[in-house]
Amino acid sequence: MSLLKLEGLTASYGSSQALFGVDLEIAEGEVVALMGRNGMGKTTTVKAICRMIQSGGHLSLEGRDLHPLPSHRVARLGVGLVPEGRRCFAGLTVHENLIAAARPGDWTQARVTALFPRLGERLSQRAASLSGGEQQMLAIGRALMTNPRLLILDEATEGLAPIVRQEIWAAIAALKRDTQISILLIDKSVREIAGVSDRAVIVERGRTVWAGAMADLTPDLSERYVGV
Amino acid sequence: MIPERLVNLAILAGLAGVALWALAVDTPFTITLATRAAILALAAVGLNIALGIGGLVSLGHAVFFGLGGYAMGILAYHAQTYTTLDLGPLSVTGSKSMPLIWLVAVVASALAALLIGLLSLRTSGVYFIMITLAFGQMFYYFAISWGTYGGEDGLSIYVRNGFPGLNTLDPIQFFGLCFALLCLALLVYARLRAAPFGLALNAARQVPARVETVGLSPLRLKLVAFVISGAITGLAGALFADLNRFVSPTMFSWQLSGELIVLIVIGGVGRLMGPVIGACLFVLLEHWLGALTAFWHIWLGVILLGIVLFARGGIVGLLTGKAGPHV
Image (tube, rainbow over all chains, first blue to last red; front, side, top):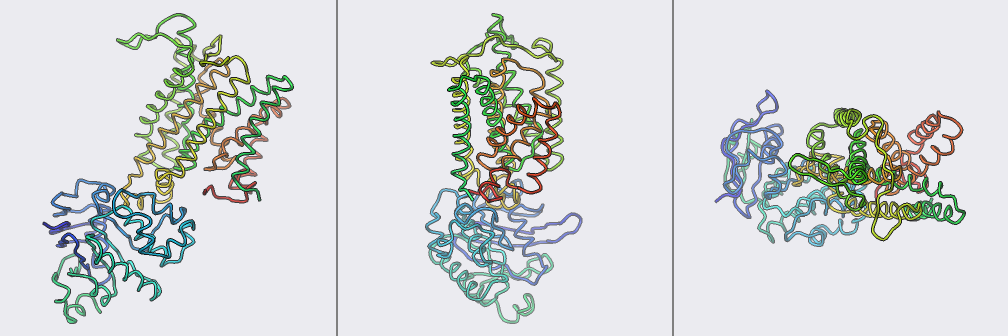
């Protein structure tokens, strides 16, 4: 059975409809890339999964309908979100960011700092004073500390220096290799995404237009729907 | 600049030192002033959980202070008049035991905070302030019209309530009791602030939406903080009533809620010792300037203005050189 299943998902911002039918499935331990041009509904899909906006259609986690649940209950069921634009708790230190919402499980502060050694060196530093890359690592670490079953990374490497991007892609690869966490990836770096993803789902104008194994995503398709 | 831990110790030692000095030179009134400062500080420590960590500007904390006061007043009144308190099918006798009175005060305040919080925390900003103010006024006017317990004139209690092993009529012993409770509340505050709950509450104050994405409900966090905050302020109300051996509707007044906020702002919002230094300064000004002029609040206003304009971290921030309350 799929861990996460979206079927004909619709969503609106007030009177403006943004999603018209997104289909997506993620199995346990699978890494799925959600691709598409800017403004096609990728982040809106993520917001709908996390119940941050009202949506319709089928949306379930392990068969459980997520629609009646508020955002924090979805997170407690095991959906960890690393939102676009990092968004750490700026006033708290790295250590405090990590423990503020931690839940029991395999992921501890020691394991997070083993994945991102830079964070281990800055435990008592305020999040606001970290570099963009470190804040991104902290955002991923904070999500991991909730011991999620599904980790959603929305533009995790956007606007970062190449060396930091490499570190983050290496961490994502390590998560895929060493854990059973399912990952939903949104990123513009098609080459890197292809390196870690099992499958891809492409959305255009709020609809799923292609879904398949990453190996089947031809340059033609990529050019047509993603623009790269 | 002075390390915050040192400032904190100095403030606590200063308050205890004043009471001990007054004992040595036999000026019991000064001990009573120190006790008043300790109790107001306790009430403000309670409010500081909601205001300092949770960012909840409550103009209704006098409700909990008043409930604590009336819990003491009602129980002691029935004990001193040998009458029973009829609660529908239940008939309860009064009590002169402080621990029992404190328990009733804390439970009543916590329940009131739960109900008020459930309604008011669905709003924010100015609406939250107005709803808490409205609740305060409701309780205030109810107390005024509650003739059984003195109405507008209030209720006098002839003898201070008792605590096992202590002579609470002795000012220094009653001060010691209040001071110990203040220290306990400060410990609770410090532990709460550094615990994941306090950190999440702090984060919920900054960005509620982000807290939701990590599985925490900002509403629940704020509600728990509001209840703990109300319970501590209620305990302070019971002590305040015992100090004066008198309760009146003014304990529910919005001015008192405002004064508690002023104490915290002067001392330092979210600082461990902010409420304590604020309460000490407030009592000092009230005593010294109050003897000179009935308009002493003007000078308090000037100090508040100076703090808000030039020392955003309050007196503690000024002494430590750190504007933020972060540990």
